[in-house]
Image (cartoon, rainbow, N blue to C red; front, side, top):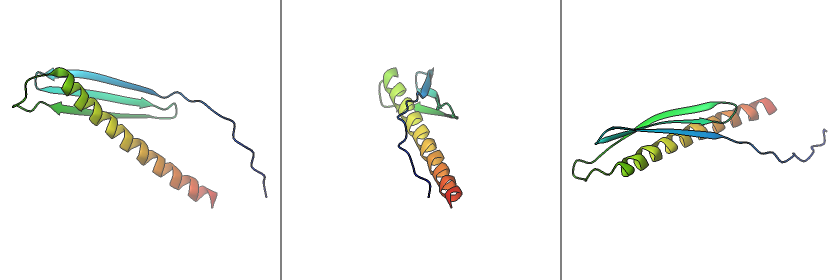
Length: 92
């Protein structure tokens, strides 16, 4: 049986890029990219202003960016699940 050694601590830097664009007074779009060094996950989301609300661009930024981050999180969890399944299969 092969003896396992303690893993060396490691530090990685992942880069998140959010490009926020006001398409109009009523819509904000975010293009987001998460670069992990091994892969880049991307998404594009939009937030529409409720016609009954006064225009406040910062709120549209927050909604669109939040949606982009949620989608990147879902993508990252999907990648992790796929990688874990492949890892478990290769260990058999």
